[in-house]
Image (cartoon, rainbow, N blue to C red; front, side, top):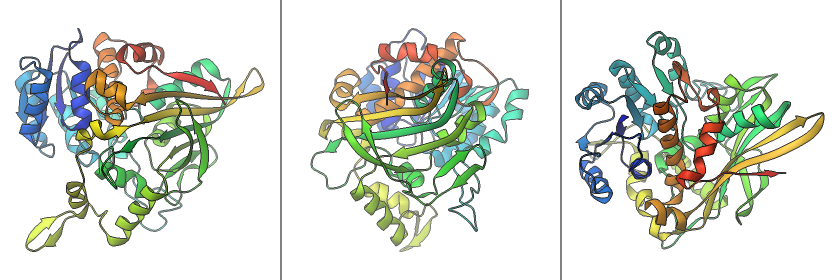
Length: 401
């Protein structure tokens, strides 16, 4: 398989590192706006032939198409911030190649009732174009990171293998990771973190469909495995809630994330000051987006691995019935930062996101995952994916709750 990797930040680097040496990979073009960053990753990989470097502006669809054709790629892997998703998604369609991302196109809150009704939902732009992708015989696999992605695979597995009926699919994410030397240093893209945490969270219920609540609503204490322990989790806008109901039968779908009081307080302050704004404003003659300024002031998450310690857990809590009896199961993956740094040289949060996209590419290349149109992870057989997780260094676990 020949792949055009658009974005060589923390997750992009982890994707390249995990794909290196795999028999299915013929070529992976490392394309980034910061070309020196891509060259840095190439040097670490030590394989210029398999990982050529190109400069790309992810907002320039025509340039992405040209680069895809230059290298004859069969798949475009989108690893940039989701603000660029529409351009990369459309470029893959124009180039006539398979598309994979780890976060769907962005939402827009309802103009009058943002905490009651959804406006433009995550992925709406992509699903509205699914028929066109079908007619062209092309596959767009959306939401194929850890959450969304692995969590959705777990939900499909639970429906197929563990339950007769499902009451709730509830994705739960928590960690005990600390970053030495910083008062505040997010371990993932702050741009994306602000987007998903300050937008109105979406919930799906069979009787109501999709609806929204206030940010950080419905707090609950969840006991995470792997020594992480009890963490308070809250509602956050996330793709699983928009994906799972399209393929799976459940009465309710939610996503809750363990942010912590300090992190929530900082996000609320950024919002109060308008520093979460992604629209450009004029500052001393220059046009800048406040959110980009916040990102520029914080350390690069890709370079924090040697300062991080602890574990992160991503998983799917499913409740329902099997053989007429109540059942509650948590399927999960725990990533230890020290192990991730040893195995692939990348910190745990980005590595745990990246391995899912790499497995998906392998399954697509092998013809085990195939289809046409815009499809989520729930649309595919989960066992081949789960069988490969341990081989990539990310074994899954399952526990009764």
